[in-house]
Length: 444
Image 1 (tube, rainbow, N blue to C red):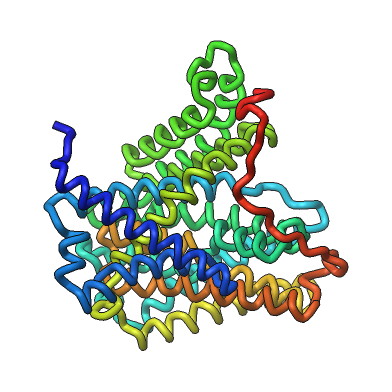
Image 2 (image 1 turned 180 degrees about the vertical axis):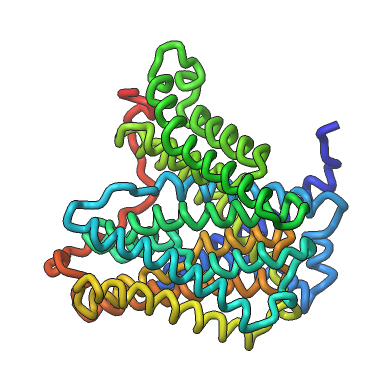
């Protein structure tokens, strides 16, 4: 009933191994070349997918990745698991507190870089024919929301990794950007959940349906931000909580699955539930425990599920046939200019110097993981077609590379990121693999 033929299993495992090898290898090479790892991981899928292997060696590609009827569904399941883990990790990085002196900068950028680019992105759909990018759902309203989000979105995981690689995670600059990105993305994921709800309902767009979707989405958000952490604080450490005592990591993965499932049943996107599960977990736990959760989840996620997810994204792209290069270049320039200008002039308006303002603007342009997740969720929901899916993925990759390259240049030239970081001491990231002789759950 739940089995898979031996030959099919062997072929699937070979395909997974090849994709995992390519994604990790090219991700490693990308890091050595000071390029965000995510670019190499997606490139692994592009090499093995229809863009390259499928184009030059179509029989080999079909044998390996389309060899039996359910193989596509198995890769789809792996992709969804990787996406769930990525969103949970993003939620665990959520920062909701600014230093008193940084609150003005943080709040100003959050408001400006969310509202203004979103509105400009929405209005930009009147400058081109959005019907050319519509998916099978044929919802123009949902497509406009996706375009607006793609202009405004910022990446928590990628910008955090860039800061870690540069050795500046402890800087004032990094703390402000990560705090902004956390709140910023929660707001934009509300919009994505609404777009997904419109697409899933198939009932057209009317005031009643839209208000109902808004109410459910915001209600779920409030429950996850306030009620779930309150409950977790009171039950997690209880002696009667045998689930927590039985498996530390398993307990929090169960919370992840419950909230993701609840989001799906409510008509809110499953991935939004996974993101809020990470946020709720962090809000509920003392620092010592949530760092253990983050470390444990990170180990299993970034070694297997997340590289495979980004590899499968690359595998889903067919840049040889479904990619409008000219429109992508225009879209890249437009998205970069809008977000850069909004953040730069907002920072100048609150009297930051020119270099600080530009540094903050460059960092806020990294769309990375959330940009790719946006494209994947919209494509899976039938909101966008394969052409626009490819454009959004490439937008996320290029803007992440541009942000990292600028910040690396600033540090290389020994320029200041912002006031307070004049004598910044670079702290190189330590090796991920650490051998600890202490028991894993000592002090629990």
